[in-house]
Amino acid sequence: MLEVASAVPAVVDIFLDRAAGIPEIADRAAALVADFGASDTALPDVLFGRAAAAGRLPFELPCSMASVAAGREDVPNDSGDPPFPYGHGIRLG
Image 1 (tube, rainbow, N blue to C red):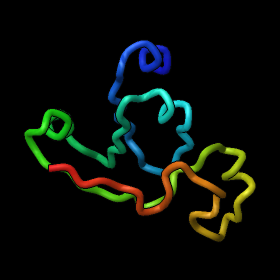
Image 2: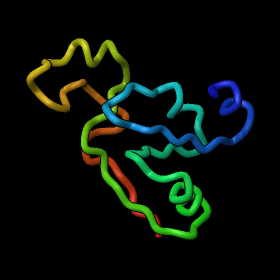
Image 3: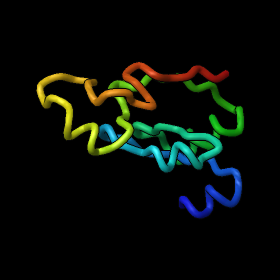
């Protein structure tokens, strides 16, 4: 996937059932979509402008697993300087 995203503009949809460190994907993707269980028909509808979308992250996405390991396990959203902080989001439509 990283090879394709480096060669052509790519929209990357990532299903997030928990926080993930995805800096390599975020750096190479033309667009990055966080999916929390969208149907196979809903995502294309949003991507092609047939439906509006809105959302905010319920947790931060850290820059690396090392930053997660350095954080305190009893304190949410303390991974340092996350590329996508808690509450990051967008509204389309």
